[in-house]
Length: 183
Image 1 (cartoon, rainbow, N blue to C red):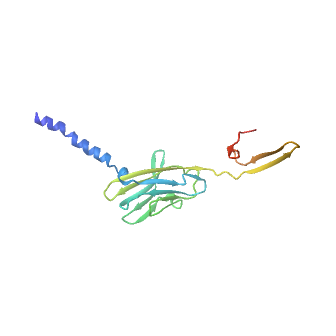
Image 2: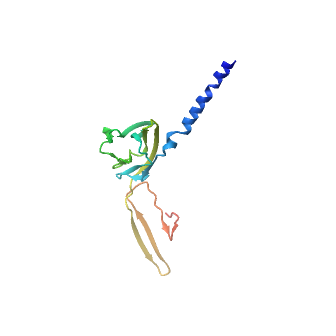
Image 3: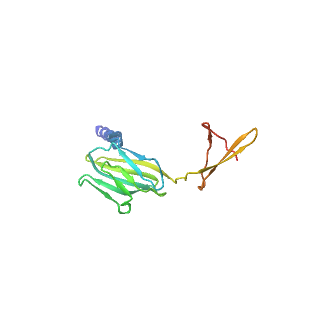
């Protein structure tokens, strides 16, 4: 009877170990965060994926892009060699700094999405952190056409915003208030 009770009691220590592993996860312990600067970038500009609070005991760190739920590696840092390596297809398009931040140069319409780092520490713990940024097309500066009509009792000004861009919306403000659309 005592042997049966002992066998039934063994899962409890395993559960405690599992919970302790979960509660002391690397994400909570290391506090690494990523920030896209700027979070919304125009096509042709650069974006910095800034890594904050990266501890000095990083053994390896790799940047990746998530495409269709698959992690595509881009760049690696290895402490042992104090070196940064780039995947061939990203060479020249990105630059990884020794503070572990990543610069994506000359952003294209195909670049927005989820990026992340996989970090391995000297104590064999790991951390995964993700960041996202958005890409938009820059809008050309519109020109304003002014037509002034003077009548004996009324002076009116007609403003027309001209732009070569399509699928944009134009909002007018008068004395700090948004004007209603008049067509």
